[in-house]
Amino acid sequence: MTDTVTSAPVTTGLYIGGEARQTAATLEVVDPGKPGVIVGHAAAASPADVDDAIAAAKAAYPAWSALSAQERAAHMQRAIEGIADLRDEDAAILSQENGKIRMEGWIDALVFEIRWNLALMLADEVEATKVLEPAPGTPVTTTVAHQSIGPVTIIVPFNWPIAILGASLPHALIAGNTVIVKPPPTTPLATTRVVQRVAEKLPPGVLNVVTGKDADMSALITSPDVAKVCFTGSVNGGKRIMEMASKSLTRVTLELGGNDAAVFLEDAILDDTHLDRLYAAIFDTTGQICMNAKRVYVHRSRMDELVAGLEARLEKAVLGHGLDEGTTMGPLHQPAQKAFVEDIIQEAKDAGADVREYGELPSDPALQGGNFLRPALVIDPDPQLRVVTQEQFGPVIPILPFDTEEEAVAAANDTWSGLCGSVWTADVDAANRVGSQLVCGYVWVNDHGATRLDLRAPFGGMKQSGFGREQGIEGVRAFQDTRSIAHLDAAALAAMAH
Image 1 (cartoon, rainbow, N blue to C red):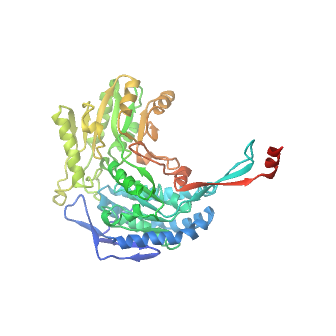
Image 2: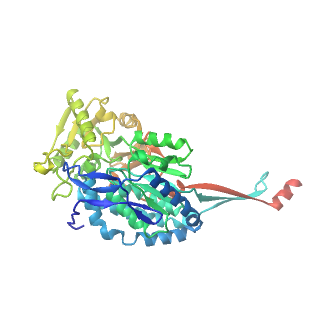
Image 3: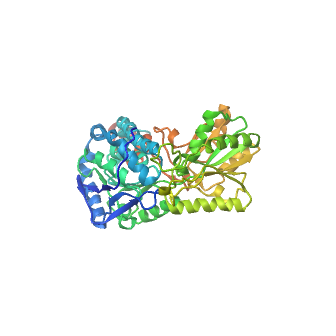
């Protein structure tokens, strides 16, 4: 990673049917750390532009789906070549439009490439079939195969938009579908740049990207020509997507919010390595990651030790602009989110909880009024406070003691969410025992967080954290349907006749 800094403003357009397209209207993208600074402008698609993108994906679908999975993989391999050439620039742009530190922007783009290449490794499995031989009373040989479903829409959020796109886009394409990508309206620039560079190397219409106001993009969800919508975002956003998709019975994959519990058993290892992992799992991207740890449950005998370990790290936190040297924590992305997190911290203080805040707000005049918030620990709060029951999506974490393993499991599962969780213990049997009781889609042992995800494994939530899976062959199957072809078996039929 170099020290490349991209000068604003950046301008991006639409990419539809193999052609770049500009629009009269644009989205203004602002820097969350520097009030009034414009990072760039993204094209604002009209409903007609959106209809054109859907039509382009529909027109490209027959030829793309007719290719073998290996042929599609070859196209996709060529399309990803050279994607890293502009990674430093992409990371700098993403840092400015999102607020995250530059290194996280760089990793965001890197993970997209890693996930793309892992999806290509699944090509041999994409068209796998299962044969059901004739059986007594069933005189047929039936082949169960997988088929693509058509044009799909993929909608990604502001926090890790490029990396999150990599969890579904290559899987949809290698399964034989064409795609329209909708980047987030507040962070559209870097994502659009990456998608367009890939799309330019694929057949026209196979991959399209449209940016704009949500109100003008509804056809991406409601059109009968869209076979599926894959959405990553908030729970309320997922509910809206599901309701809109129901009008045309469009299928959905929803990867929504989380209120992830990290459970530290009595024998948990609390050395620097493990505490560093926990700190990152809580405070990466200023706490704005769905799979971050949102609640920490720790055996009462280890409470002080764990708190001291986090405090030692928080005391070194440097709040500042994401591109500034030495910054370890950037601003929150939106003023409204900052206000929400401030509110739940104040609620905890008013309730008498032990709230400890760390670090110093930036002194640079250019950053005054930015969405900066001091990170905080809330020690042993009332479990009914919002800092415990709601997804904070900010730099604050409640730490709650427990006395028994059963108590910890019950508390961890007592939530609306079921995205991820973690168990921290030196005992493998205890890890498996507790981990298997956590009601969530992904469980770490002695680890937690987005950067620690096995990118080969299926990922997705339970309960209100959504449904469907991304990554792995399960992520490919999410963009396919099954077809059964039954052949009458003459010998079996003759045997039945006698």
